[in-house]
Length: 315
Image 1 (cartoon, one colour):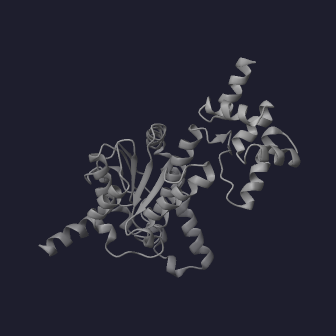
Image 2 (cartoon, rainbow, N blue to C red; image 1 turned 135 degrees about the vertical axis):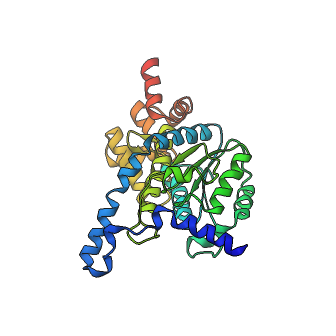
């Protein structure tokens, strides 16, 4: 019985495009360092193009995420190995970049936090871990669960997505395998995002093109979602958290650029706003005090341009 299961798994694995021999890099061990890098770079050039082919599906996913967050839900990534690490990285960047509350975007990785630094043997093969991890988060129908797996078959990820769906969650699935293959894996996802990267430069090393494609998709999901949620003014991050000296000075520069004021005025606005960049910007642009700026933002869903339009209308 065990041999039969192993044979089935073997056949499933070798059918994956990421497990195929890449004809372009077959002699990578026979060339110079510069030629190795050129081969890898040439393979990487195709990654943005296959991501581009999935933009409509990515847009659908963004719509689901925005709707969920507006209703008080969360975006929860679930993955194993490189895929899981990328989810954790994206989640961890959202608070400092967009001022997202901690816990709004969450990254789960098979094997827990220790798996960020070292492989946890067998963790990705155990579907029960996924259910347990999601139960610990008390998921509800307001949440969005996004599975990330290059192969589209990782038991931990598939089980997590399907368990989440059974709880009424919206579900997404990101895989770098062929869409037709992924759709046969029994994954109950509302949206599938499948940038098919083909064979890796080093056979089976999905930390390479697959990981790059996944990172590009994750960048798009959270960036587009937070732009729509009013976390930027144009293409400038205005809800950043000033967690270090660099970000404090970046905040002043943002105020200087948008309000067209000098360093001293920007520093004064930031201080009077309670170190809240959006409030400082409204104070500077609308020439109002902190309380008025906060009221304008509250009545405009935190969107600066909407708040400024309200001033124009009322004026």
